[in-house]
Image 1 (cartoon, rainbow, N blue to C red):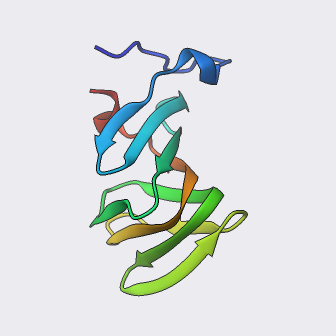
Image 2: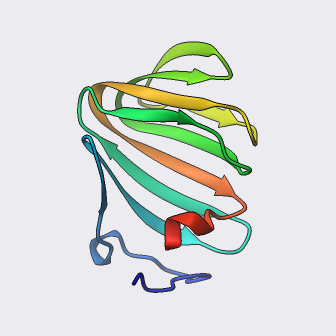
Length: 115
């Protein structure tokens, strides 16, 4: 069972464990409240973020690495410093070209990530 950190004012990365998602992908849920959530996602080279959609608005900031993202049928290669905007219910996914880290922000929070 995950510890409820909802609305915590300070969340320290070294106190959080990664959740292994398989296929070279792992994540840790950082700070969150009812309306907002931030998640750090690590990818090994060649790992795939399968195409999916959800009812949340999502921003993704590329902290490191390179990724080929598909958003609503459009493919682009993104690198550290680039940002992606994903509207609710729009299919999106990625392939990691160079090992890297993404910082995802969701509104509202992803309750499914807390189970």
